Image 1 (cartoon, rainbow, N blue to C red):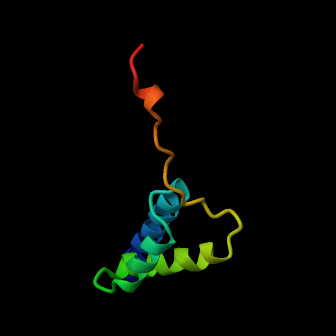
Image 2 (tube, rainbow, N blue to C red; image 1 turned 135 degrees about the vertical axis):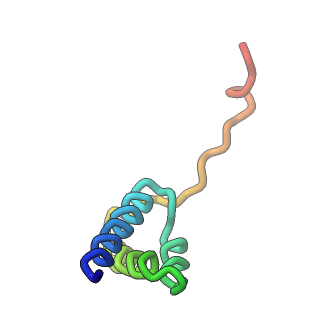
Length: 76
């Protein structure tokens, strides 16, 4: 039983790392997941990812997307 829990925790950690690197979730989202103890695997994985990215120099830039200007929306 413990082996299955470790495997699923590793899978969840991988999923969260991938989502973080793609910019789908941010540090705030990871902190929220780490604080939510109702889902133990996600909580544990989020804590691991937070520790790993805390000192990472390649944190993705969490900036909002640029708005599309009016002339780009006009049909030609």
